Image (cartoon, rainbow, N blue to C red; front, top):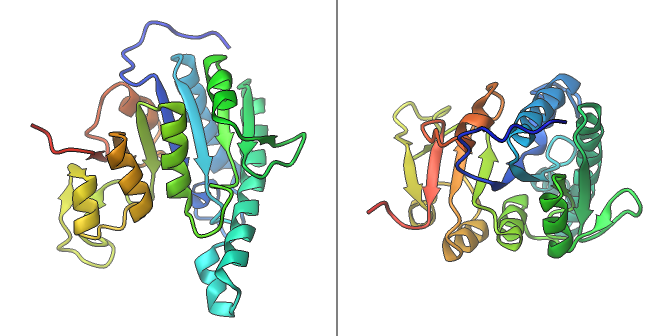
Length: 248
């Protein structure tokens, strides 16, 4: 894959958080291969620009821990099942990346050798610097923590310039706009505002980590063709930018 060095890229190392639901394209099955292929194509375009990209994948298309609680399943068990679901998602995504000529590695705190390697931040950075996409599976490796928190932790470890969170609602609102037509849209917001106003776009632990380490986050829709590349070229009008501190 020949890289394009002539670009207007503003962020050179990023972490992309993909929900499990982004892989099923709102289909009743766990996976929509069309949706997965479109996501992988967006990653390919980014790799051509010499962007180092790591991805945290959720497991909600296969298993949602909070839904399992309604059936009396203990949260620790539900969370461990959810972390295992992310292994399958990462493997499917890696297979499609392979089809597109993109080299990738899957790392997890709970490895499944030889397919999924034991996570270590130095190993992840080495792979990124070698031009490979890194897929982080298995969340934090511990129950009770979301993949939002895993994304924040991994972003700190690899010293990411930006966290990209792909969502079904491509902006931050004061309330769920699907339920409240008067919900206010934010173009920029701070982690403090997310916490104090309980905006629920990311969990509290992730917000606190990102705030402490001054890592910005862009909330946007990755399903619109070209959006990922536009964000990395500095077009922050696509979605909502989350900042550690208010703009001066």
